Amino acid sequence: MAATRMGHRPPDGASGSDRGPEQHSVPRSRRRRSVTRRVPPVVWVLLLVPLAIELAWVFWPALNSFQLSFTKWHGVGVAEPVGVKNYQTLFSDPIFHIALVNNVYWVIGFGGLSVIIGFALALALNKPRPGVGIYRSAIYLPMVFSLAVTGLFWRVMYQPDGPINAMLAAIGIDTGQHQWLADPDTALAAILVAAIWRQAGYIMVLYLAGLKGCDPSLEEAAAVDGASWWQRLRYIVIPQLRNVNTVIFAVTVIDSLRTFDIVWAMTRGGPYNSTQLLSTYMYQVGFTQVNLGYGSAIAVVIFALAITFIITYLVRATRED
Image (cartoon, rainbow, N blue to C red; front, top):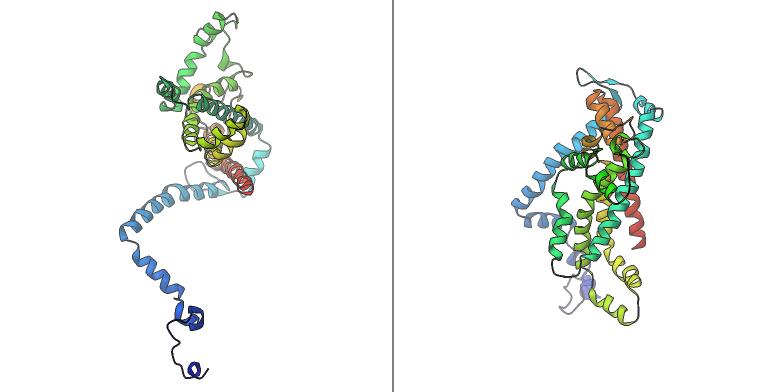
């Protein structure tokens, strides 16, 4: 007690807690400065330059588009503020309703079927076999072509005298040279087939990468215990693909909502707006009719839908973890 009162230093063997907080703690500001000094300037350059480009080319145009959605502007002169009139018009716009419903079908059909087909292909081609690399390359090959080229290719395929009707006739299905893209009842489904044909290979590659990271010993142990193939897949393989599923879900939802090229190349939203999606309608209103304020409102709706889908899925996945 006397030594402590006189300010004598405690012995070396004393614990850090006996020395008082002022002797073993470093101020936070000093620690932050020391960490900042240890980071090389090159690292700051590599971080700040992409951030500046992202702010200039992504976030600023997005904010500008959100601002334009509350105006009436034809690309020339000063934009006229109209408040929420553009959003009120959306609720009474029949073409917007058609595009919204078609987008729901597109997300379910394009997202669901491409994921199911891609996952099945990944399971079939995961094991090393003779020639498996050729099959993988052939299935992934459509992804190399752009969506516009894919749309033009399938547009030729769907011609009345094209390969699709000829193939169906060869197996005994007489379509009467059906015009698939000119029929409002079959046009959207025909485009969906072409889009899945291109997307399935990409999903397959993502799942192949995820399957390579699965622990094979767990599946072997389950097989020894008598688990069936479906039980091993459901309870061992699929739980290990959670991170891959998150990436695939985000990519699929974003691709579904921003699909434009293949629909525009095949039907331009027709016939009679039966294949109109939110992206094609946004382009038609914004750049064909030059109503940039109303087109920006549709773009904001697309962004809101994508964020809602992705955040909802991430919250559910986090809760499950």
